[in-house]
Length: 196
Image (cartoon, rainbow, N blue to C red; front, side, top):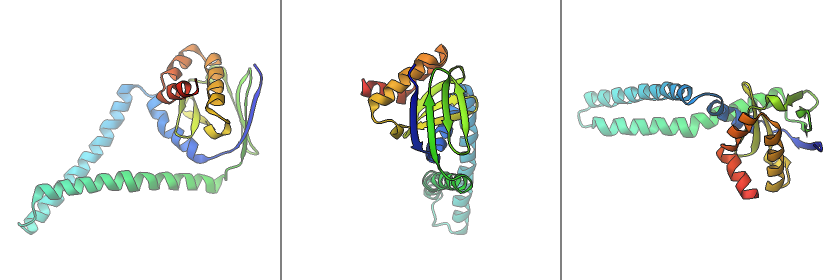
């Protein structure tokens, strides 16, 4: 295999997005269902709070209808959670990481031994046998190994054809089961079809 060398500026948003998707790739449907039950259970608790608020307001003033207040509170909770808290938490997490370790020039290499990421502080090698899956985020190719996802930004490669070529090289060298799982990723399928 001809060695592939790329240099790009690291961006923690790509790592954050890949990590956010990792649990769906790593864990079984049953495990993901369990996590959703916990999430929806906490939302149900918020719903009970909304109901208590509606009932409390109705007791305080009989002219305030209970059901519309409960629905309004649930909608408000959902909007605050989805549009305010999640994006805020993402921005704060990325800012905290960048404050401790500012983004630098990253050197990426793919060769017969595997994949390697290097900058002034990092020298991380991942052998082909350790790549468990590939998947795409909105801005990067993610390489899953154990509890981590390593990323290569899509814009480090010049075109969809170059991205496809790299993915084909990876699929050919990683373990067969990992390659099969990777081919099932929606983003990988779309990229391969678009570049083909």
